[in-house]
Amino acid sequence: MKSDFYAAISQIASERGIPRDAIIGVMERALITAYKRTLGSNPPPMEVTVKLDPQTGLAHVYAEMQVVDEVMEEHLEIDLESARQFQSDVEIGDTILVEVKDTPRDFGRIAAQTAKQVVLQGIKEVEREYIYGEFIDREGQLMTATVQRTTRGNVILEIGKAEAVLPLKEQVESDRYFHNQRLKVYLLEVRRDETSGRGSRLVVSRVHKNLILRLFEVEVPEIHNGAVEIKSVAREPGLRTKVAVAARQEGIDPVGSCVGMRGFRIQNIVNELNGEKIDVVQWDPDAKEFIANALSPAQVVEVHLDDSERAAMVVVPDKQLSLAIGREGQNVRLAAKLTGWRIDIKSATTLLEEEREAAQAREAAEAEAMATEAALASAKVETRKVRPDGTVVYQNLHYGPLGDDLIGESVQLRATAAKLYIYFHDRLVASYILVDPEELDDSSTFADHPMTMADAELNGIEEQTSETEVESEAEEEVETDEA
Image 1 (cartoon, helix red, strand yellow):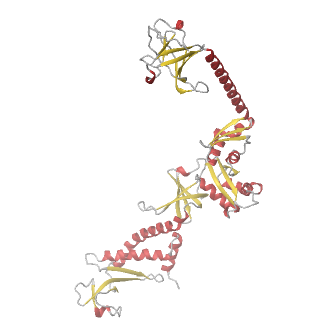
Image 2 (tube, rainbow, N blue to C red; image 1 turned 60 degrees about the vertical axis):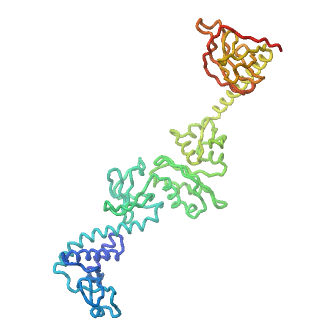
Image 3 (tube, rainbow, N blue to C red; image 1 turned 120 degrees about the vertical axis):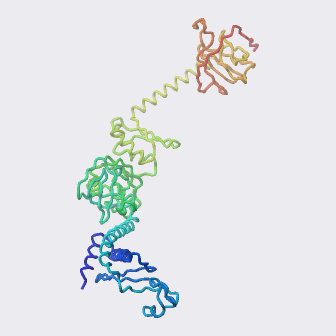
């Protein structure tokens, strides 16, 4: 028949969720501490061991003693003859455990006082290690937790016999918590908390995107058994989530499997997340198709990719533009996270207008280039020598500077109605907007708005404009083009 002691130990073990043997071990260590305290100033033996009978609760104290020929220290040594009464094969120099028959006078009272404190502390340590060992391999898994209380913004939860904390930063802003509320949480981390005395702490999350993945694994058997794979998840907790899925077996509709009959499966997940909207889309190895799917529920006309920038320009019908972008850009933002591409959305009308404007600009540029080419072909060619300051003189105005490498060289000037073009050995080196000398005031004798260009051909070049003030000169050096 089991004693009251055994029943009490079993009850503690059950309440704490730790093995009964661990409780016995804690109590034995507590009794060792108590025994040593009762010795007071008396020298203790080499080592003391306490064995507790789990059935009766009786404690047996054993002292570790060394076997010697002649005993010099009774609390540490035992002679060979006495030692062989406890262990027949013992030899000189061996160490044996000898049961202590006479316990100190106050051992019972001191043991009770000491054991209570030590046992409580020991049980907490056992709990900490037991919880750590039980949950350390479960990081990253889905847990069912019960709300206990709220402390400084953190929600304290219970997972089995363990305490978990849901930090403020891991909470969905719109969620509300109440006592005994049951939640699905994602186990982020198992921490050893040795300093505060609280034992191991489980840190959980309701905002981590892997919470979505784990919920789908629970609700969708095809994901659990590997027939359907979740390729990526993009989430704005409490608002909206997009999940890209792909089939790993022929004949399986991955999106339909996740949504379930009449949306039953996906609705269970939405309910667990307190109404957070979830879009399940088809993953595709073709980036264009995947991006178009990711923008669901909006319809997409076409997708243009820039692989070097990993950017996509998506065209949608005019009426679908707001839907594609989403409230405050949410839909396109989540689609970008889901696909890993930067996405720019334009309506079909906007794209046509931009293409028309670009075509008009090209036509205008081509017409201007043709006109310039014709004007230059008929323009009179004049030769000038580049002055020491790097400028050339045309119509009593200085244009430049052209660069130190051209100083002293002869250059050719061709002028149209609006610009002056300067060549060196048939290579265009600069062009300037012509200034009418009559428009200058008395203090201005230099050309404004020079446009410099080096090592460029006349046709198809992009001119770089810079503003430069050129000093005036009184004299003009002109060389007549003999050609």
